[in-house]
Image 1 (cartoon, rainbow, N blue to C red):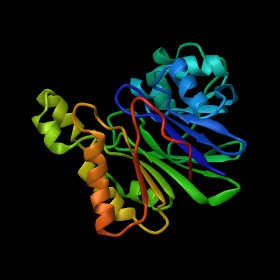
Image 2 (image 1 turned 90 degrees about the horizontal axis):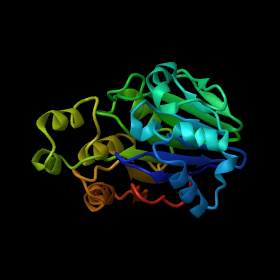
Image 3 (image 1 turned 180 degrees about the horizontal axis):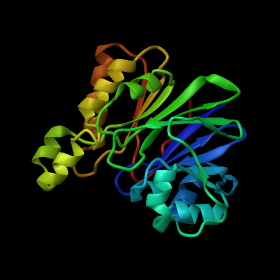
Image 4 (image 1 turned 60 degrees about the vertical axis):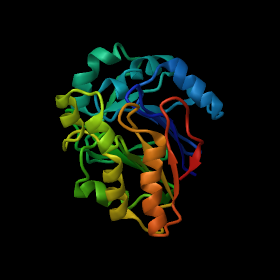
Length: 261
């Protein structure tokens, strides 16, 4: 068994719940304990049973609530050394020492295997993840957000997944015609920024197969995108190639269902 819910996704905060029959973790914690507790209760998940909080990079929308969540639940934080160094002031005093992982090297929490791999983002040690239940390696989950482009390592990892949570941050026309200052527009569309809707389709076009059962589009900009545009851009491609892959869009404000991976 492997299940996932994107609790919240976007510039105001990110967190993904991943569960097996023996393990419950959060990937990132950019939201308050109160919000995380509300969202997990709606999914009938007890946050006090959390086994770990894994941090992808040091930006506040991914790490901002991790310290409080760790103190409230007593769950340890798993983080790379570089990211920890940049996040100490945001985490505060922790109930247990954080576990340090190396990007590129798998580690295990109970029966959940986590493989962090590098992502192309403007953070010190930014990473994406491939996860699976050690008791069933057939079903795998990939989480790939906060990346400016799709390097070959990303494609190779995503090809292994049966469920992919993939960034679809902005519509290029909305970004370029929108209110952001030029330097911020340049950062977002750079190789260390965020994937556009069209780039997300480009990624899926390289990994699509009968193995890929579900795509969840994530980290949508509220200013430079909208769920309908992101969904339609991807579903038009999936329809054109007659793929039967399920498609949904994560929200900044409410959790997705707890999907079977």
